[in-house]
Length: 222
Length: 222
DNA sequence: TCAATTCTTGACCGGACAGTCAGCTTTTCC
DNA sequence: GGAAAAGCTGACTGTCCGGTCAAGAATTGA
Image (cartoon, rainbow over all chains, first blue to last red; front, side):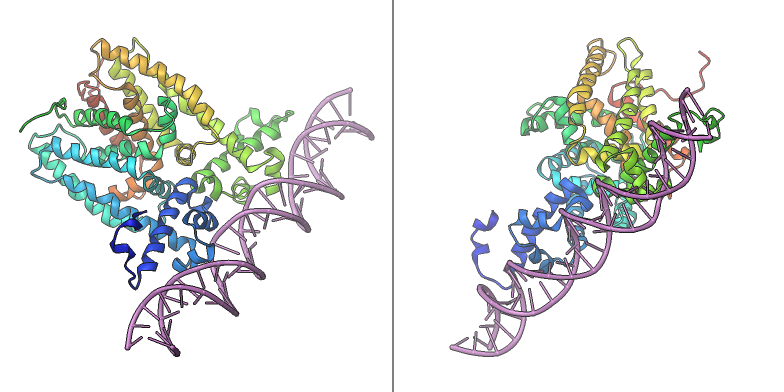
């Protein structure tokens, strides 16, 4: 649907490849999210992308290659919002920004979250290295930042790694376990309003867990 | 392996059925946890149970029937520890008991947790009714209890449902995403000691989220 | 002991699925 | 305009897997 923009109509070498590649990746993310790697079929992905199956194999040699491409996209997406956590940021503001961004990702990209969760659940064979290297480094960094906050008395004493796990677990829960959330809350779907409420309540819990005072969101003019 | 107890050696009608049934269920839980429903094969389950494949179909007609039996076992297991949450319990004690029990379940029954998570992730088609009826009722009940605590000023203001989701998300995270936790913490496996540490830190966070004072665990003689 | 019941299992079947390929069309670039 | 490159696809194949079955072995209960 973004093909209605002006530039994409310009015929350029590689245009077809890029457009179809993206179409396939999008369909694949959806199908992998719904069915998992094993349960997904190339035929189903092809149908949802509106392309014949053989065409998928023209762009991505194998199912596993396609799956890895989907995961790559997701990992890139995954890491960025944590940038909010920096040594001299205000802890309450930084955590608010981070949690809000993670919940927003759960709302707008639930399929990405589910593919990631599924990969974890089944042993993370495709992204072991990512976890053990990139992610570990990142967590070490951010844990050091939070430790700094603790040492400076800016947040209450806590284990920074478990605190980060908690933020991940809670925010991704609303994408990964959305069925459970919906059934228990008696909703057919989770609306933007539902997510606004959830964000406020989750922020309250997480900020309080960090020993930060609840700041009721009143329109400030600072 | 529990066949070394005295009673089970006594030949009794139905003994074989029970023993083989349990063996298959145990193997199935493991394989479904590792591979998901679609990725699991009856042949693999049969191998792990040490039985020929045709025998599985004698006890459980179809793969789906076997899967449902595995899920039934898990759901029963899932609900029980929440009993700790009652109107006139001490909130700190009740929550400590609940969180500890949930983390202990993640440690001792990680496969059960993963099967459950996988079922959620892929739309909960087998347990929709359970979620919408049993679980919803239970959550309504327990949320009312927690609301009572809030109204009495015994815990800080919070949305009881999101608070329960948070406890579930965090505690189950250590079973479902164990790979991530291990890789990031640089552990090959999570030991009992690791879990003791995790339990203490998670409790600290959750109790503080509920506005309950941190009580450092010193040996009391009350 | 012996018939009825329960349990066991190798061999087999049909359908579904990932992946291939040869021949075709479209696009690119000079 | 035309050759080369890139893109497309229907038809096919080999494998894997859930499920069946018939014939036999073990267990039960009298």
